[in-house]
Amino acid sequence: MRFPNQRLAQLYDLLQNETLPQDELARRFNVSTRTVRTDVTALNGMLVDHGARFVLNRKEGYQLKIDDAVRYSLLQQQSPSHLRVPRTSAARVHYLLTRFLTSAFSLKLEDLADEWFVSRATLQSDMAEVREWLGRYRLSVETKPRYGMKLFGSEVAIRTCLTDLLYQIALEDSDNPLLNIEALNSGILDQLQPLLQECFSRFHIRMTDDSEFYLRLYCAVAVRRISEGHPLSDFSAEDVDEDVRDAARHIVNLLRPVTGKDISPSEEAYLRVNIAARRIEEIAPSAISPDDGESLVNYILSYINTQYNFNLQNDPQLRADLLTHIKTMITRMRYQINIPNPLLANIKQHYPLAYDVTLAAVSSWGKYTPYVISENEIGFLVLHIGVGLERHYNVGYQRHPQVLLVCDTGNSTVRMIQAMLMRKYPQIVVSNIVSLRQYEQQGSVEEDFVISTARLSEKDKPVVVMSPFPTDYQLEQIGKLVLVDRTRPYMLEKFFDASHFRIIDRPMTQSELFRSLCDQLEQEGVVDAAFFPSVEEREAIVSTMLGEGIALPHALGLLAKKTVVYTVLAPQGISWGDETACVIFLLAISKTEYEEAMAIYDLFVTFMRERAMARLRDSKDFDSFKAVAMDCLSRL
View 1 (cartoon, rainbow, N blue to C red):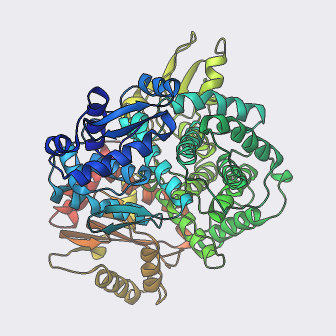
View 2: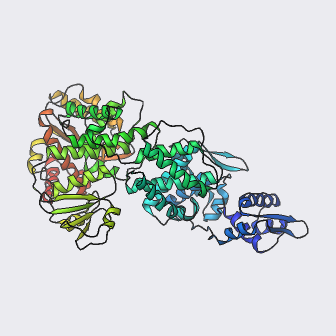
View 3: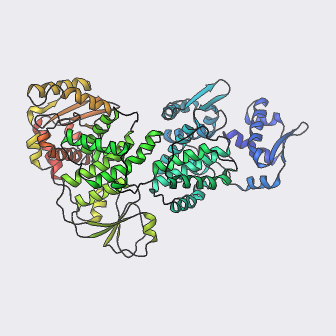
């Protein structure tokens, strides 16, 4: 049993041990007798399903009366739900969100401030982030004088918000008490794990570990909401594959005894959509009918070929990967289901060219469709496009050692890791790819060694742990560090020069900077009048900030007549959306030199890896800038 505030928990403990009158309770808690009566009524509401209640004996006070000894003894056997006090602002935001999303009562900041030993003003400051978080899901907190604050919004939004929150918390700390005590029924995640795994195996539905965990979190959230009288209603969805429908029905049958209540058809429909949106499709390209998904694949590949001169249209593996991902992506877009992409920031930094071409293609397609594709979804598509670019425009390696790859974080991540290994270690052959569960079931390993994205037990062959974007230490464990050699000093000689170098030591807006640089390039005949509006349009879609104060503004497509990199150093900084850019590279890339664009992007990624922004920013002229850049390259 969970209490909406600490005072109720203390009152419950107190009245279990002794009978006390209203006046004494009011004195002990420093509240009015009216508040005492309200608190006792709230406790009785919580005890309805546990066979007990507190009754007022006018001569003695409130005392516990047990109506069903069996149910009450079960309650007594449960471990107490005492939470640790959140110490940081981020932790308080998580706790506040959890309280609002799970409480059936109005909340008062004064009560929470007393419970967490902070001031009301501190919590009031935290509420700004809480409201912003809830606003993403169209949820709002309304305040009523003397009653406190209460959450309002649709049940689908509440469940989605709570599940997303718990997923993020689990990534940071799997033992967080919000997961195990406050937000979910005790032990429910462990209880559901074998049930869901057996269900998906039985109905041949393949999922990544992350997707399976997310669905487990959703089911745990649904159990609590249904059991507390908050069912999902009025939700309908288009029909799905028979195996998904059967799996959803099976899960509903498993959840019914856990909730102790009937489960509506709307609940089953929403569960079907969530399963369909997160499963991994295993369909050959020839088996996929020409639907919206195939139209989108054709549009993206055609746009990239037309606007960027990268011809990926005849790559059957890329088409298969995009089709299988986009089929479930369209389901997510249709029902506004968001899946987290924890690698998004790394994708932007390590696949900047693939990110740009994919973003441009998707943004262009978005003008003709009602769907809104989130940055998370674009990030997944970028991995596929990036791998396609690697496969066709960076080839020629030979690979020999046999490697078993253990990776269960998604089809796109597997392709990315394969491409990275082939690029950095040309002698490697990934002979087999298995999930974590499949590896544990294997008796032995035939390959020379194992590369895994998580820690594993050795099966008579060495195991090397490698993250999707590996550290230098991890790369050294795999073998000699090998980097793609496209950022030779001639790149600086060919595309960077003193006439396209500027130090700005006065305040300037982003638009003023674009106008000034583009005017110069237009006067030189490098670009035409369409370049400037295209640069502004690209920036409006999503910030071109690479990170660490480095920005890469550019046009949508290869619009330049000659490839030029305009370097700008801004020691005072230029406002770049929510961030500040101090080193800016305006890219003007021509179609005749499109293949070298990949090498240019690699140069900027090198600056990021070397954390060279401050040294570049403090350069006094082009020669000193070039010296810093050369020093970064010499470290490769």
